[in-house]
Length: 420
Image 1: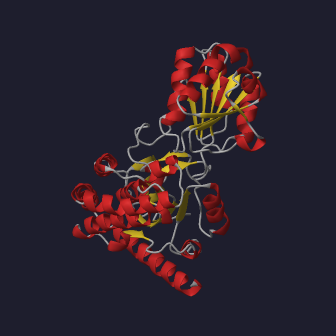
Image 2: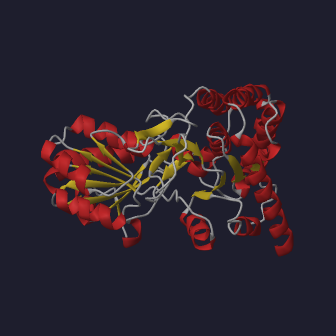
């Protein structure tokens, strides 16, 4: 099995490298046409996609997956249409390749420019959400990259159907078939072998649970941009308005509890236990949310369950929320520093000084003031489709759109100059 996995990994990686070289010479129009066609095919083949998705859903339910997991896996007509719209939006984004980042005229007459170019070959490893297959491939193709996709086994049939759409659209426009490749097996050994292909693959992006991120990071011989878990906090500061605070907490936690920008831990100023915490917690419980609270929370709201140490820093991805009462802003920031995952952190406050301190002092890919954590999303930030949300610091942080899938090169234009 090891040798077969290694052979498959080398073949895919080398094919992607060859495809990336051809993409360097491809026209923007050809890539746009391929994406427009992919959107058309998504709509035209939605029955086939739904049929494949039904197989994955049946398997997931049979294996006892929870409601939030099933929600991430579902591709109904509405979500397929949303994918098609996202691909169309990506297709018509302004061209980033070849754009000038800076230009300088040197004293010796040389014109020195920095221009945006593709990264080359990207490897994407992800779990459960099949829309990632479409969004990641679309963004990479628009940015002139070849991509190797390895989705989770739980979405295997759905991803195969989506990959067929992408392949057809690419080939019809004369682009290399290997520009978008989906690993055709659920064998995990292929991931390990792909992570060794440093001569052909330029960047690995893991997106999923802690075990997956750790596996990719520890086994890669290529650079990794981590899309780590979303342990998102919200701090309700003293003086926050009740209706606003309650609405934002409910939106952040309950709108889609199974996504990475959903709220996982609520921090409440001690002075606001009676005025804010009690009504908000009761309303969450009434809405079907399980509360795991600190001693103060449980004393104030007897329906809350006592939190354990394991609940701090845990990504529930479900209708479960940890709640802790803190003495002040500094204590909230200290809790976030210890238990946050560097994804999204929010403060609800009427105090501009506290807002400024939170913005400056909290280390995360996104800091939100007086709004829901759910806004840390490529579409909401104006990026269109996203490849994910990076929690590492290099080479990108936060929502990854088109720009994040490029790098730069220097162009020197001369008129016969030689160095002395």
